[in-house]
Length: 83
Image (tube, rainbow, N blue to C red; front, side, top):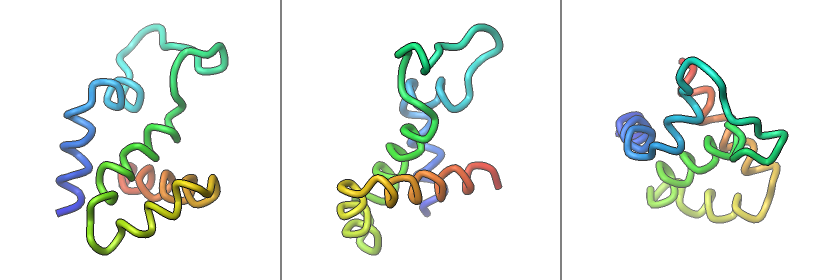
């Protein structure tokens, strides 16, 4: 199931987990060069979840070259996490 893979991908990556679900207190400022944005981590999750899936692998591969498609996939992951 893709939802299970999404959750396990977050739990397996401390970098993604700490960015998307930061603890209370000071956070690294991305505007001052302090790490990736949440949308970049959402894109990484899209690659981890859909990159080796037979139905989505080609779509993810083509999205790697197109920033608009990367953003669309990142938004899909973000929306799934919000639901």
